[in-house]
Image (cartoon, one colour):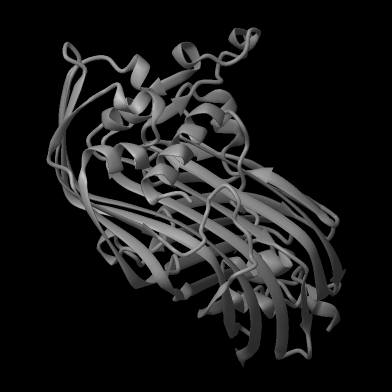
Length: 448
């Protein structure tokens, strides 16, 4: 059984050591007019899709890792002949309030269909995992995860330290319909009702946590309080959906279209399309949630971290009390807004903004990162190519990616070009999917 603290720091260590690898998220791929089921992860009103008769999603895998603690340098590929090295290829920026985020999203077998010109329906399956750690001192992290090489004195005071790991599954039923339709405008709305199957979670927090490390004596002095806990049976190394906890959630969205009135327009063409949605409303309540409250006022040797995990260090050196509670782990509720402008029938440019509606004070909740993206796109029936430019929270710079839809296959990354070109890339992502679309061909407006 793993405690939250041990889980979080193990995940951070994993990220530090594999940040050259790809992770995934659907950056740039959700606004494509033929995105199908993937479009529902942005706005459920995408289920009303005049360019698709129906779609069967076989699988789509997506994930994301980001932070403001370590950056990866792949700009000099000639220097990688002997492999990645921490000294030459990783840039560390420890602060009193470093942040680490990650998520995994797997869309399983799913189906959507246009029942008529005004009504559409979708049934989707999904497995998701979120990881957030906010306001943790980077130097303290280094001491805990690499005690043998800890060097330099430091004194930090961390406020509002928050962390969560949560894994769950979803079965969603989406219904959408056209609310208004005339010669110039179109408005559609939809709702997704979701059954949530919680596999488990772990959380931790501290209002104030101070740390003083003295290299000469190899001692760590801490002060404050630390709370952490995890649901019954949760183990981050072997998460299974056997003993699940039920919950309920919902997505709600609207999409507005200003139709293309030109002679070259298609019947389903638009000049501008915009949408707004609130995603991931709800949560999962876990009973039998074990919680510990530790008094962190003590001075210990740095050698304690060499042969022990963090849970053992806490048990051996700090006074703590254990209680059993019921904990409601909230979904990563967010506001999603997008706009898509049609330059021609095949060339588009879109803007997308994502804002978390959950705050650290709402713990325990998962959170999406706030971001803004601008994506030029070429789109035809069987091919789409897009290259998103994104500004993501915690990164301090622009992420540049590339994506492709080729018939039933989609693949890409919202940061692959930045990962290759930048000397300090703070995030990495990629995605892959296979779907079976049944397209509806648009006709010229003047042939109606």
